[in-house]
Amino acid sequence: MSTLDVIVATIGRAHGLRGEVALILRTDQPEERLRPGAAFEVDSDGRRRTLTVRGTRLQQDRWYVSFEEVADRTDAESLRGIDLELAVDAEEEADVDPDAWYPSQLEGLAVRHVDGRELGVVAGVDHYPAQDLLVVRTPDRRRVQLPLVEQLVPEVDLAAGVVTADPPGGLFDALPEDEQGPEPETSGPARTER
Image 1 (cartoon, rainbow, N blue to C red):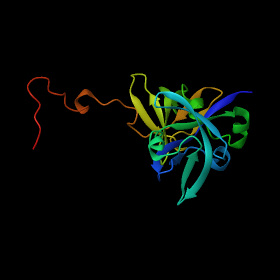
Image 2 (image 1 turned 45 degrees about the vertical axis):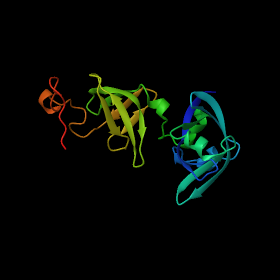
Image 3 (image 1 turned 90 degrees about the vertical axis):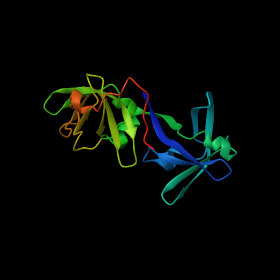
Image 4 (image 1 turned 120 degrees about the vertical axis):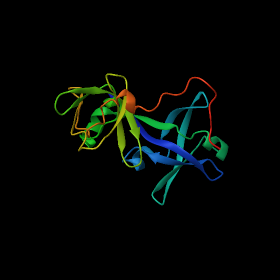
């Protein structure tokens, strides 16, 4: 059985005084993945620790969770930004939605323009509230963020290891030297406006 590491949620700000935290969901199955007793291994303050879900609640379309091991706001605040990951069966996940991918499946795939040109390699996925962005490392080592929407990424072929992209004009074009902004001054003191 092959497994995938799936990011279920990212821990947001502390809420209240008893260790509850807001979540930024990364799953469409929060009731299943965040049920009481679910345990997550995380790195916090340079040490590995387990966080066990005590309970969850939904308030104004926002998910909140409390963990057995977190008793106060200070500890909860130290968890901000940590991803909650679970290992899941890859075959079961593919059956749920064949057009859904996990960042770990996309990283390292070649990115080709619809006309066949090589655009780069997937370096990761950035998650934003409006949409996810595919982070592409171009052959000249630039980092380009491509919205992961069907109009711009019409095909992802995991078996072939290729992402087909139809980006808007100019997104993958390097700026000429004179359009990259002025060179910083290297002589004399820095001046600031008052």
